[in-house]
Length: 280
Image 1: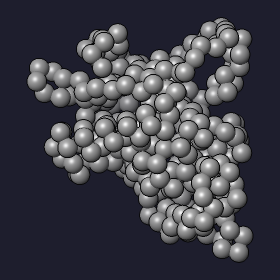
Image 2: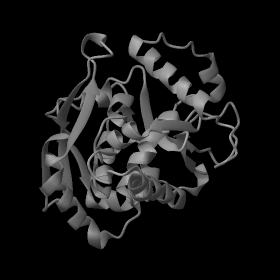
Image 3: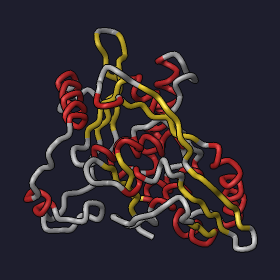
Image 4: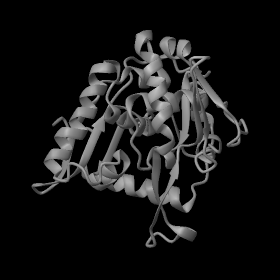
């Protein structure tokens, strides 16, 4: 099993919520997929209780219960997504698909086994272009489901260490569009809780965050984080698989219209919220 989970940005930014252990199991299963590996919805991905104990550094006495609970509920978890058909940016549609096609708790073997759904598989294997990678060890250290989701979103911007998202985008990705309707409640009960969980579990990334405003109205959130120390430019990055100097030599990929639209949208946000602002 790889120590790194890879998912397309489309999936990372989709709307879903998983419990702490559901996120761990999904991440552990996805980490078993090698880059470029072809899989189908008939392929099983298995996580034993012994592996879970070692991987997440947890007490064995509760692992069996957690695996059984995930097996009981994961089939009903869904992912919400938005898209514009035929590249028409002003036409937006919404849909949902399941995380898994099948899930089993194998009591005799003390393991859980899942088959990813045919709808989610492309976002785990067709990763030419924009995709996100995160450490399964880091994910396992976070006990807050909101904190786990925030870490996934942040890792899209690992190279810059800076992310801004509007309230609407954050609500959608966190799958809390109905709950905590008021902005103040959403900020305190979701964003603050998520950020605090990361700050406690992963102090090495130095996460800072604040609300962004237009006038007196909160419009979104800005996050800034770093790696704990500088590294030799010839050291191979454990996520990217290349050294910093090698990555600089790689020619940039041609942007698709959708990638260009997202980039320009992010640039507008960056102009509104200066990354060097000291008011964090």
